[in-house]
Amino acid sequence: MKKRIAITGSTTGMGAALREELQATGHDIIGLDIVPPREPVFPFVQVDLASQSSIEQAAGSVGNIDALVHCAGIPDNDAPADTVLAVNFLGLRALTDLVLPSLADGGTIVSISSIAGHRFRDRLDEYARLLQTTSIDEGLAWLRTAPEAITGRAIYTVSKEAVWAYTMALAAQLAPRRIRVNSVAPGLVDTRLVGAFLSNMTASGKTVLQSASGGPIDPHEVTAVMRFLLSED
Image (cartoon, rainbow, N blue to C red; front, side):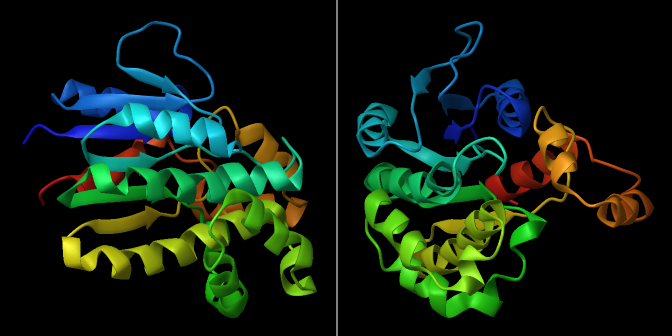
């Protein structure tokens, strides 16, 4: 069944891999990214997920869709903490909220989280407080007043724990519309960001990674799961 699917982070990494795979099987793709594609081979909307005004403008250009996929993300040594939280979670949430009226009933939302976020339930009360905020600015204010349980952790981990918590809450909220909401939580993936993640790992962490999986996995191993979640299967 042909679908119209919006993908953030569509220019590089897993977003680009997923876009190419879905296009190859006949789906219509709307790409969203801060970086324009080298060639105009698909409808594209430029967006800065750290900017509320940019998100609002982009959301107005998306139109009716059957699915929304969030692949955009940055590591915590690439930008200030506010920007990492905004791009990885707050902007993701803001864009989702704005396009929900244009998302078909029975549609799908899929986000890339990270295995780094799997302990989100240990801080669920704090993430419940974050989910009560209603804008990027309010979300950043939450971060500035958060306890040590949050501020003492890497901001990348915090942002991905927030995605896990949001996925659970949004799935319940959208159940009456039969919209499936899922996140995938890979470990280290061989994209352009792999160097940044490796530089943040301890020697023992790298040893565990090597023994557990042999190193970073291929992006297509993740996009295969995402394509399943987007499918009628």
